[in-house]
View 1 (cartoon, protein in one colour):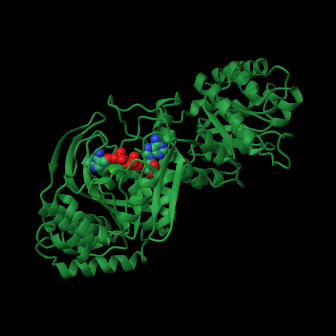
View 2: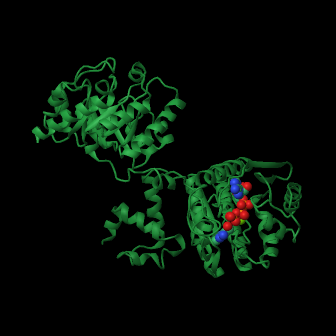
View 3: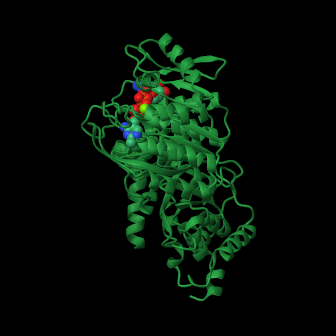
Length: 555
Ligand SMILES: Nc1ncnc2c1ncn2[C@@H]1O[C@H](COP(=O)(O)OP(=O)(O)OP(=O)(O)O)[C@@H](O)[C@H]1O
Ligand SMILES: Cc1ncc(CO)c(N)n1
Ligand SMILES: [Mg+2]
């Protein structure tokens, strides 16, 4: 590859910069490229600066560097730190100090990384990346603590969070008593906060007994005398306490921070995650007290969410930092992605009609599914949010038990809150690309479109299907422009996405709609024809037969 080609290839430059931290560029990294003999370090730096200028100033993201041990079970240590930072929207780089063979039973082995290699990792990250806050976990040797202290002098950062990890909850030693002196002498005086649990606070204080909340108050003050700006003594292991109580001392004021104690075995790694979350909040710009409070709320929420998950056979399991695992395990009979054939008989609810016939939303949905509805959309315009959420939850149960997707009209918040299968948005609702960002790649998003341009935009925005109409005049939507069968056909032919026809469709005209016979048209969406009726299941069954007949003739 010629030098000029390298210069003109953004990908080559991006990879080039990614693989080569400053110190390595000349000697090692160049072997990645055939131009290695031509580019010298000055040119590279010049080129990088030029590229940054060309791309605008770029966006600086909050950045935590964790200096900690690896936990093979991934509940604590480096792995917990990465997940906690990700959950808080902060970038996390990692310097590994030790590798542990660890699971929910205990620690089966520890291999300490040589201190010069810890130093090398520290330099790689600190010299190149804009670290805001350093968080420390397992620092298993005196040499490693000293190396860290030296690196921080050379490359100062905005904040230092020290979690003085010593013993795992299973009782295994992660950093022996020999490091206590260097901890006290070198690390604590430069720490913005130190976050010991009861045992660690006791060890740092020479074996002081800590059994009560007032003992924790005293310990926080004594630890503060060792130099850190703030102290958090964690009470996760406080015997017989109904709440999870931590004591925070900033040198002037002392705070008892309480949260409910979650009854769960899944508390492995709470300490690491709490400290990482504090570091993440500091990196985003919070004050120390705000950061600690936010971190405590985060742990409480994550433990609450994870209380029943089962990972491993030992006494202490990991929790779910991103609050997502359960969804896939339990509720999702809808493991598959979006299937366009689900649009075949698309039932859209209407609260006024349900009220008129004395149906609850859940009863109406159940009846529609029994009659053959292949997808359901809750379109509840005049309902309180809380009632909507409750109704959505009960409908979701019904839909999941029948393998029928449930979409929410317009309300992305409600869809997220009840973990529905997706949303349907109109042209004046939440833009589809923003709904996609909020809902993630797996949820279904449908968009109402009347024109080929809108259909094109929906495709571009990452929608899964479009609803096209009103095909016929309808009184479910006021002032709705009717596109007719011709308009429907034009949009279908232009659409890259599957289409469901909507608007005034029922038993009498569903056949005519399907007869336009274009491959993009997958089915019809109906409101009144199903729900403005006494017996919803009977009406749905009849419409289902009409559609089956229409499609069998058409095909
Ligand atoms: N069951 C629980 N419910 C709610 N919060 C808890 C629970 N257990 C611990 N916490 C909170 O989690 C945080 C970590 O405290 P803990 O005393 O468990 O740290 P730790 O022993 O260092 O944790 P680990 O060694 O498992 O990483 C504290 O804020 C504590 O109050
Ligand atoms: C690697 C590692 N760091 C910290 C802890 C403390 O939870 C642990 N169990 N393992
Ligand atoms: Mg701990």
